[in-house]
Length: 267
Length: 292
Image 1 (cartoon, helix red, strand yellow):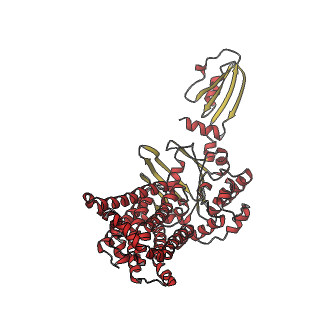
Image 2 (tube, each protein chain N blue to C red):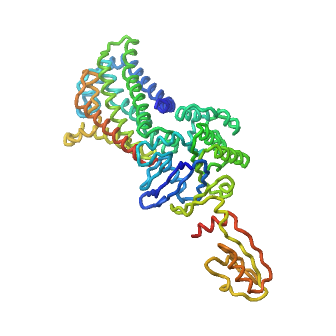
Image 3 (cartoon, helix red, strand yellow):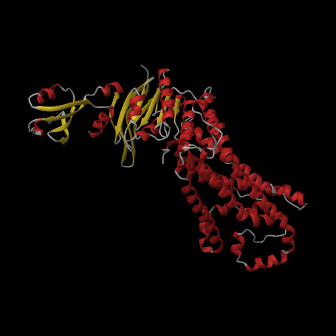
């Protein structure tokens, strides 16, 4: 089991490092921009007043004091850029892990060993969880030492709350991606279907924010539950969000396991 | 004799396509079974079922007493060496990466370095930079390095040069003499004739025959070229064992199945100008089976 985990981690180390560094560099960039954002706060508030309230909510900037580091990061980094980064990383990781190996038939190497399918699945699954945790921790908590370095005020507990929420969100994305990876025999299909699903969720989230008549549809978008303002600015995490994310992650992962145990590995 | 592999009424359907349709055979310890068939006959599908890459639609496989119907079937693979095709190796890994991973999965190998030397293989480059032949060498080393008791190989000598093919045959014969059982698919009759002790022929998902090579060679099919000094109607010659292959000036080329006695007695009454009789080789016997 350890051998499979080690191998999976080693094979995907470069994408992991690249995405993590990308996430950290973006946080660093926004932290460095904080003084200029604070200086232009008056103009920014005027621009924001001119924008529709729904869109402001969707962007997570409604009623927020942009002068704080947490508000800046919530608006600029964690509302859209970070989820996209995380989704790209997780979907590409999960897609390559099963569907990608079935596609180029390299999965035969591990399947021809005396390991049960359950063990093979869990080894691969765990390697994804390890990178997901490391990615989330690195790209959320990195703001604390950076803020310290620049001598800015920061609310450390808020970043831990952000990390918990992001981790739950990541587990749901990972669960669905690994389900698609277990189901299909080509990574293209996994990327395509996951991409369509998550983009549709995001578009729906924006539409719902702009149009009250679509309000009931908000519950089917992950982005509704990924309430960054509450987590990062107000240090609050909604129990429903955690429940939805963890339930979806768990159910999708279990389905992925069931499919993996019984499917044909042939293209 | 200990039976290593038992395949009982194996069926694998992909929708309406019957890739394997009721295949049954057994392989005894130390045997080298050549699994012969044209493309699309069901050879690779059978091998994939043996390794549990795909699940049978019906029937049962038993390897070392582990049944495909039981959840512990995967344990049979601890004694199996499966030849990974060169194209199914990881492009970004080096030869060393593959060999180390194989050791991590199957246990430390005592003969890894010996095999590397025997096959003159350089394990340092990445697989994407290896020639097809070198990929095949790597696959063979990976298969043999865990010293398995049962080898399963899908077209093992494809893309090996003749010298390496000979080296491979030598290794396989030596392993077989030490009690290792081999199941190998092939298109190549000459290869099967050279290295295998038993042959199973498959066509359109159905097993046509399973025979010892020696028994197959003993199948009596003769090619007869005969000319007459008188006009002879072909109806005089044709019966259930005798077929006209070609009409030639003043005569025929025939294939005669079974004992020659009846045929000789029949033509003895005719005025023969010339006659040549040759026993069919394995290829002709094989083609005869596929005509059915």
